Image: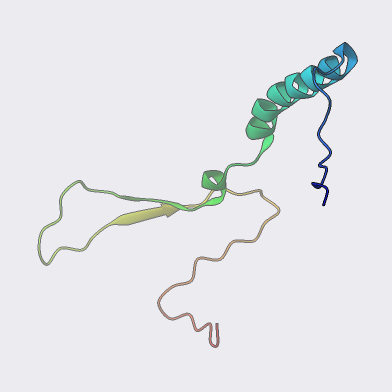
Length: 88
């Protein structure tokens, strides 16, 4: 019974192969940071909220500010407590 032969690349690699691999990795190292910068951030599209006073006392109304920065072409709706969105 003969042992199964596995195909393995021959080593050492040729100079042309190493140059090609090196170029691919070099290109990848240059593109990854650029792609990370070009990707839109999720924090840019989330509403931002803050309390208007640093302390709150029992029985006082809590003042809270909610801001959402968006493109002028978008329609944004902030529903109040009377809004009915059933069945969602």
